[in-house]
Image (cartoon, rainbow, N blue to C red; front, top):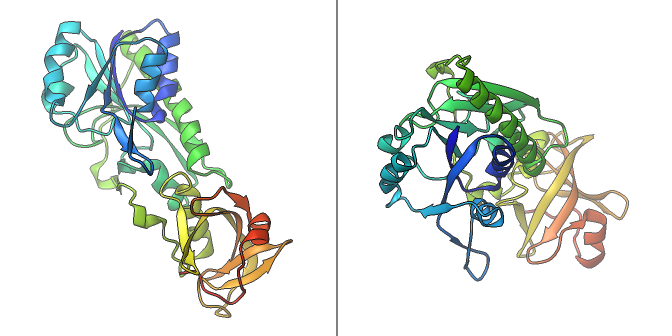
Length: 312
């Protein structure tokens, strides 16, 4: 297959690696423009652009304004397939219909569940037992095309956004190669999505990181693990932003003994425990904004906290 690949985030790299090792031909890679990142807002290339440069593949950088101009380029290259993985921009209908065969997408959920920008995050935040990847034929409506193939994986108790994203990235690469092979052999069945079962995974916002301790403890922990990479879960203590990177639910019930957010235990052995709505949450990894992450015990050696204080 003659392929043009659209992608921006690291999620697509496993698929690019798989395609590079296959007999398929990557004609070009399309990614988004460099974006300002970090405290000094320096321009930073997308992981997909870095991959293209590392492996000496031709690439094109596009914005929302100039993406419609790609249709003529794709037709001139006589691409069989467009493959879209975590690209970040909406493709117009003319572009979707420009390859000889079709445009397909690797989506990191079991569609029609979690259409949208942040399916992995919401699977974790909602405490789902399983998730997976979907290979679908792209249409104008977001994540609504016919399903070519799905693969499932269990969400483990200790999974966070980093571990689950990595596993789904590789699962997506495996599913992609299988779907292309079926397309070549004409053995694929297109399954329409059940619109009645569709849900939306909205974009994660910075304010989603603020820990709301009036939630059940397990939900608090799920959100902490889902937001570990960005925006990171946080509260304020003494006017300073405290980032919570990992936590677990303790067996100890709250039963209205403590107001949600109250620090209930501080010690080198236990670390830091905080009251949620129903149980206590033990903070395992914590970070003072601008400093390095530490275990809760190590953090307490250099940062003074008091029991019965409330995290804001």
